[in-house]
Length: 83
Image (cartoon, rainbow, N blue to C red):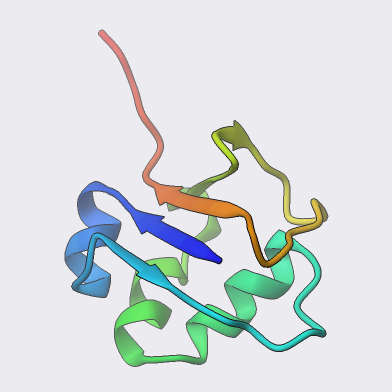
């Protein structure tokens, strides 16, 4: 699974992307976020506030109950506002 981090989340985690192999019981976006938060204090800090994190699976916005698989690309980014 390829995981991408953008903007402030990239700064907090400390990497722009990583390839991960989560356990087989990680089946949804919500499961993945919970698992990632347990991987390091940096991940926990970056993903702690759901209001400050948007998630896309294979370049489509995703909800916490969306399923994820080993070949998916998961992107984490802050909310975007325009002017």
